[in-house]
Length: 451
Image (cartoon, rainbow, N blue to C red; front, side):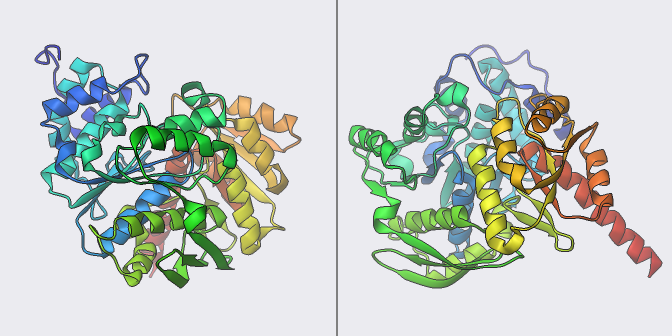
């Protein structure tokens, strides 16, 4: 590693996070050598705890959160590393549901940033090294690790086979094609790269065309392959307009009826089933009871911080937020809205997308439920220009208008007092939630002052 003494450390958390955010998102020379150097300088913290490693296009954050929440309910000290965050960077790194504190984040980053700058590491490599060190320093019993992008060359894949209990691969779809490949088998191949020698792998992606890809990697790594649909099943027994879902889960060992979850929709039912399968496979090392699994679902927000998965912000008229940011995610959102009784509703939709996302395909999926499209300009470098999205929407026959900010778009939408849907990007959810929470806080303050 090159000389690190020349780097001048920022003195506040805000300054050091600003520096962290300026780091490149991807690196021209893909590989694990930079994260390996960072972790070696930190004493290889990733080798000091057992891990569960999750990859996939959609659902991996939910699966990771369900697993972590259930293990927390069982009394284990659980580290959880997910991305991206919605409101604060701290959300990415949790122990027992508690975000890394500002003081701890500053202390760790002041040590790490000179190493990061010397290694010319990426934002995600820095965040991953930070998470692993935090988990090791706090003696977690187990860590649940979500990949960032892909799997094979993802920074999280530095995890050693001797420390990984199990891996899981959720649904596969077209996303980040410029990095992961243009075809589903190519993308699946990158995800399958997280398989670890000797560690079982749960594959929740159901398409037969991708089975040879997973079987190939399983054979190469001597990883016992378990295809979810061959051993496990889930059925939805109730969906309600407040997005409460009831399901039944079954496996060769157990059947659970009447399992309630605020994670709603067929895609979330499969995600819950995937987590259920993972937990069954590690039961001998980390036993949990059916009641602890149920309470893990009920307390998932507290235990994992999971938000934005078809979240009902207000019931009348409904305001719904979802972090769907690719075509399959949007399709699942529409399917769930229909299943929960909103099939006749035309939504005022707050929408934008990143430059590397398939905005036209997402808009085409949204089109049948859109009344008016509100497209804000995001305060984010990778965001697609609002004018470009409006032109695309108009080409699809949608009513669409650009706004200079999320706040102005939200004010215009809220004034209509009609059903409101927020979707298209984690970054949009971040700005919309900041606006919404500020509005709620202001309303409560006014109510309190008038009482």
